[in-house]
Amino acid sequence: MRNLVLILGAGASCEYGAPLMKNFYSEAVRISSRNTNSPSLQQQFNVIFGFIDRLQKSQAKANIDLHNIESIYTALEMSQLLKLEDLKKPSNWQELRTCMAYFLTKTIEDNTKFQYTNNFPRYWPDSGTTINLGNNRKTIDSVIQQLCKLQDSWDITIVSFNYDLVVEALLCACGLQTRYCLESEPDNLKSDSVKLLKLHGSINWERREVGQTKAGRAIKDLVAHHYYIKNKRNENKNFIVDPSSKDITTNFSENITPFIVPPIWNKSSYHNDVSDVWQEAAKALSKATHIYTAGYSLPQTDGFFRQLYALGTVGSAPLQDFRVFDIEPEDSPNGVNSRFQNLLGRGAENVYTYHSEGLNMLATQLACFG
Image (tube, rainbow, N blue to C red; front, top):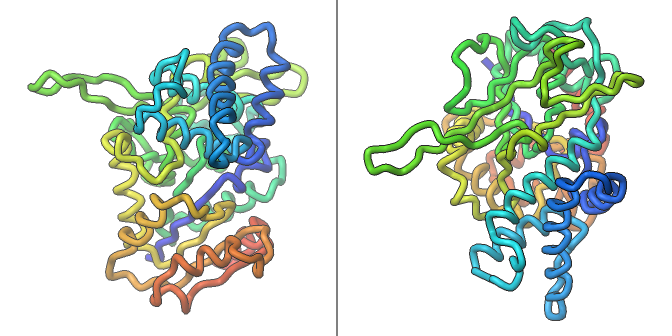
């Protein structure tokens, strides 16, 4: 069986409104100004705005991109690691991290809209109405639909750096369940469920205490809240349906503290929580005959993925095809194409192709396998 690993970045979800990292801050400002009557939102957003303001005042000797949420989140984590107490005041580190999870999730949820319908298969047998993205005819719809057609003849794994639920909802629209490979995942997933390995966490994951060791230390586990609408009269509290447009927006930010892993090179403090997911990603890479990436720019700062790729691809399976699908011109200086070429070893150089047509070309390429 051929083994395909599809690696997705933020560019794969932007068609459904999910904000890119570079415009995240401006979107958050817009949400804050539009929700002045929400004390909880204002309080949590202001904690992060205050942290950003303190960062801005400290930039006489260095430069931090304060419009890029990855830079801000990285600065928060590094500030705690280095015990830079002045940057946390008047908050504490736990409050900052909790508010950052809310800040990220709320901004994603406010922008990402799904379509309501009764016409597609149920995600769980008792769930009633489900989410449909299949009629919107967006490019990412075609990518996932083509991917699902390969289920019988390919071993498919999706690796994602995104926090949003766009891929899950698209799989649901195709009648397939999502397998996160979390330890706490239910046992009744169908055999044809699709592996979706979210390396940075997800807005519908939360950490819970499920027991204690003999030493008395709490064992932390992750619970994935699978998404469905129960019925028109009794809606799941994690979803809001607009009665006029029938658009659905998720509402996890108001009900849980989502488990979000910061996009920094040092993720050691999170490895106990998502080690199963990272191990599964390494296993998939080791068996991959085809590796495709879309909407992921391989930033210079992402040392984590570079190491995961380098170590994960150690295996006996010969790599037949490595393709990068992006919208940046192929010859951009120090661009996406250049960064991926520098990532690859000799065994992958000969099978590497860069496509500047983005998701359109990815959908076309997958259709060729059908």
